[in-house]
Structures are given as structure tokens and as C-alpha cells.
Amino acid sequence: MSQEFFPLSPSLWAATAAPAPVTTPLQSDVKADVVVIGAGYCGLSTALHLAERGVRVVVLEARDIGFGGSGRNGGQVIPGLKYDPSELLAMFGREKGQRLVDFAASTVDSVFNLIDKHGMAIPHVRRGWIQGSHSSAALKQAERRVRDWGAQGVATKLLDRAETARLLGTDKYLGGWIDPRGGGVQPLSYARGLAHAAMAAGVVIHTDSPATQLLQDKGRWQVTTAGGARVSAERVVLCTNGYTGGLWPQLSKSIINANSFQIATEPLPEVVRRSILPEGHVSSDARNLLLYYRIDHSGRLLMGGRGTFNEPDPALPGDWSHLENVIGKLFPQAAGIPIAHRWCGHVAITRDYLPHLHEPAPGLLIDIGCQGRGIGLQTRMGQALAEYITTGDEQALPVALSPIKPFPLYGLRRLYISAVIGWYRMTDGGV
Image (cartoon, helix red, strand yellow):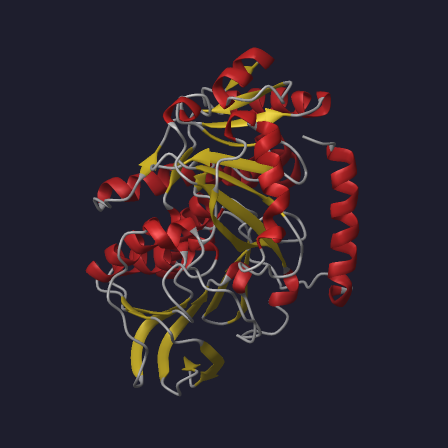
């Protein structure tokens, strides 16, 4: 991969994560049944669930476990997809649509079930997710979502303005809704927990081993790494999402790898801590350029949102000033509390805001498109990919295999994305 990314070290997660398992770079040629490229949520989940089915798996990671979006996100485990159940049913029909709805409904369970199953000693909470409504249109959207998920048997609840203010700790929303399935984790610790579980199941993980070439020869795939060593396998699973480079033609052009900026305060004074998200919910609002926030296990306030398209420099705190201003406006009680961490991660956004699965050559399976809900989505996707690989049953996949389709005029993406962001900022209104 030719892209250069800033290290994990400025992030709260890198500072507080559980230790990673001991891994080494690939130094000599090896064979496997399946080679997985990318040690993030999808790659590690796929590897774990394949190993539990008796498959020999080698994982290649360009940097460290969770180096990409899996170690840089906000740690919110949010159910569903960008589309609501009624929209998915209309888009795909009753049978395929319901299968995708059921998949989307299972994403959060997949995370917390794995944490319990493997005894992962990582900070996590599951008190529900609240989406605040900043406008009358957003309130109508909340009403639809409550109806939609209620029809699927989820105990969702519409919140009035007063209840929203009480549960969030801010009076800036007209109302909202709550989904009890949501929660939060220390995301890098979770990625490392998946790695520990996968290795215990027999998976071999090689870090600092970027894949540089994929070739198929005599029915087997040869994956060459930067150091020259290769993995020979019957199958390859490519799971690089927002950190996808040029390993496979046109793949990186099928997504927008937008930046998601985040900051974390010093631990809040207890009186302030009790006034913000007092019941332990996580939250992201309904803006097009959404804001998302939570309190972590050490009592810090985390705030995230979109920022510039360029990779920010941790040495220039001004790149995160828009989020510091938001904290003061949403939560005046936290204004002035020092910011301890500033970091950024890439979100892989597809043209239709859905996850995409590709099989551009026999034995090569590609997953891409996290849409900002990667913890649950990609954990569950790994389970689905493992089932498909071992059974050949396409019904195991939540979406149909499709050809890779680059964004039109990809070279101009920064211009049109900047224009869209400008429009969203105007239509979303201020905090």
C-alpha cells in the first residue's frame, strides 16, 4: 500500500488498550488454506470463525493489529445499517430484504457474544444507543425508525425533548429515539481480543507484513509481501476497508475513504460526569455530518465528527478545533476541560452506503464498506464470510456478490466531496 498514515499513538485507544498478542513479520514462504489480508475486525473475525471450522488460516497485516479503522473509531457498537428495515425491504424485496434486515439486527449481538464467549477482558458497556433529532425532519425520521424496528421486535422508544435532554445531558435536540441494543467498547482492545482468540484457535498472524502482489498460479493464490516472503493458499480474503491501496485493480476507487476526527478530554470531574450521558448510553445524532459522543470507561468525554479530507497532523491541534467548539456548545458544563487526545481514522463509504462483497476471480473474496458502523457490521460479516467459504452457500452472505464499480470521476472526488460537505453544513444548521 502506497498511502502513508499517521501512527496510532496520539489516540486514546492506543494509550489505554490491552496488550496485543506477540506477532512477527512473515520471513519465509508458508502455505495455508486461506490467507486473510488485514487484521481489523472483518479480517480477524473471518480468520477466527474459519479456524473454528478447521481451516488453516494465515493473516497478513501491513502494520499492527487494529492499525486501521478498527483501532481509530469511536468505539460505538451501533445496530443496523444506514437504511431502515422498510427501506431495505423496498430495495431488495421481501425475502432478500428481510435477510439483510436480520443480518443488520444481529451485528451488535455478534460483538458482545464474542466478548463473553472468549472472556475478553476489555472495557465494554451495553446500555443502548440514542440518536438525537436536531430538526423537525429528523424527528419524523426517528418516528419511522421506532416503527420500523418495533415491527422487527426491537423495544425501541421515541424520546421527547425533555427525556432526550435528561439522557444526553444537552438541550440542543428536539427529541430523539433509543435503541436498547447499542453499546460501546474500547475498540483497539476489542481488535486485540479478536486476535488473541483467533491465535488460540490456530490462526497465524503476521504483522508488519504488507501484501504487495496477488497472483493466481495453478489453482492457488500466491500473496507476496514487502519483505519478499509469500503465502500460498487456496483462497484469499481481502479486508482492508478505508485503508485499501492498490493491491487489486479499481478496488480503492470503489470507496470514499473519508476522515472521521475524534477528540477525548481528560477525565471529567464527577459532577460533570454525572450530567452527561448519565445512564451510560452512546450517542450519534441525525445530522448528515453527524456528531457522535460517549463517555469511556475512565470518565473521559469523547467527541467525533467529520473534518477535512486531508490527513490531519497530530502536531497541529487546530485541525480538531471544530470538535472542541462543539463540546462547548453541546455540553457547556464540559467547556474548558483540557483535551488529552486527538486522532483520526478512515471510514470506507460506498456509492450506495451498503457493504459490498466481490469475488473478482475464483478464490478471491473481498469485503469493503464499513459506513461508520464497522465494529458490529464487520464482526458479523466475518462470520458470514467464514460460512460462505466453508459451505459455498451464497445465502450465508447478507448481500449478493457484485462487480467492483469505481466512483465516477474519482480523481475529482475531493472537489465534489467538499461541495457535498459544504451543502450538508448549511442544511444541518449549527449546534
